[in-house]
Length: 303
Image: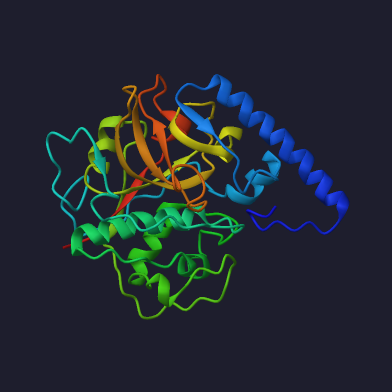
């Protein structure tokens, strides 16, 4: 309670939360005895049931068919940046200065907006040399034709909106308020040309794209272990029903030879590995871990 500034209004509520906390702690301890490649830990979500956690923090709204790709000025079939014929063994866009600090969506179901912004911040830095934190709040307030603010959305719709409306504000000029607000869509500073979808369930295509820029990706984060992931290469139980928007910012191999994708989450820097999770990528499922390869896309930007 002290660490995470929890205040419970009644003794009944406190007792209820303590029982939930104990149940979560037992799950963490039990999982850590069994899991070999990742581990769980107590965090700010430890007084929430898993259903409460899912209702508050998972908000992607995928559709049965993806949007047709918006035309852009790039002649490349995969990226604005020239594709290497032999992709590197490892890439970490954090080390290349193309990833802003981890943000926290809070109780607003805006993961789709944070995923979109992370990818645009990345390509903007790669093309211009400037890492600029951009406004998720602008998407929440203004991109309302297909997306639903704090009630979920889809990254491709957001890319299309940004390309058609002339760009985005800086985050400092249009700060995040963790709720839906009034649209103020003027004074754009960062633009994109359009976006492209990575072919579904195709590892080579995803790694080629990721070798050139951060990507928006969708995952199934509904497994209970996601709530308390603390470190390691995640290879635990999860499905492929996409319910959370995140950003892929690199890939590599771990100490045990486990290949992984580095994923930037939007649950703050206290979750996971300072806000990131490494997800195993060599599995026997074409969708890969938690549907990671099912629905990836990225913005394009002219130099």
